[in-house]
Length: 284
Image 1 (cartoon, rainbow, N blue to C red):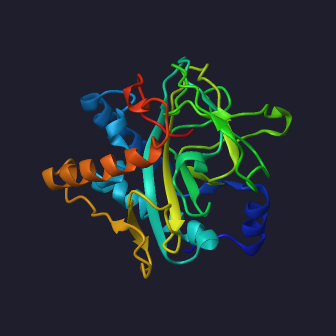
Image 2 (spheres, rainbow, N blue to C red; image 1 turned 30 degrees about the horizontal axis):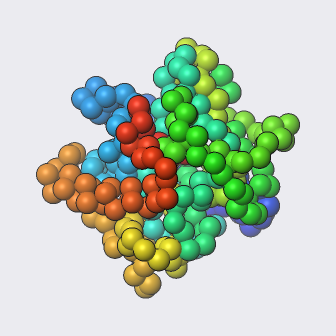
C-alpha cells in the first residue's frame, strides 16, 4: 500500500512548510528501533558523540529506515522520484535535562545550491510538549533569515545558531508524535525546541532528503546516499551502505564522509562546535 501524499496534503505542505503526523513504523518497530539505539548508546555514550552523524552508514538497520518505502513514498510526493539522503542523525533528550534548540532554519549553514531539502523526523518515543518536542512556525519557510552563532552550553545546535530577530511564538505549533510517526518539514521553516521537563525520554531519528538535481555550493565536494531512483547529475559522491554493524570498511568510509561534511557545517564559524560538550546535533 502506497504512503504517497495526496495533492491536497502536498499543497498544504508547500504553504505551511510542515506536515504531520504520518504513520511509518508500527509501535513494535519503533520500540525495536529504540532498543537498538540504546544498545549503541550503552557502548558509545548517551547522547551519541558528534562522530555518529550519518549513522545509517554504520548500521544496516538504520540504512533500512532511510530507505523505508512509506517514508520515501511521502518524500517522493514532494521532491520527486530521484532522491538522495543528505544526512541522518539522532536527537535524544533525556528526562529532566536542560538541552534546548534555539529558533533557527536548517539551511543556514548547509552549503546548499538552493533550499530544496526536507527532513523526515521519525519518533522512536512519544514526542510531546513536556519532553521537548519540536516546535515550528508554519509559513516561515519562504526566505532565509539572518542568524547569529551563540555556542551556548545547553544549546544542542553545533554552532548555537539562532535567528537574529525575535520570533513571535504565538504562531508556533507543537509537533506532537506517537512512536512510529513522522513529520516532514522544510529546510527553511523556523523551528526549535524546549528542554525536557518530563520523566519521559524523547528520541527521534531525523533524515534529510533532497532531489538528485540539487547542486551543492562551490567548494568542498559533498557526498550523499542514493535511496530511490537514479542520479543523472553527479553533484555528490554516492555513499555505500554498510555490510554489518560497525563493519571496518563502513567505519573507514564513514570517517571520510564525516570529515568532508564537517568542513561544510563549520565553514566560517568563529569556533568549532565539535569541541563543545555533547556537540552531537546540527538542528532540533
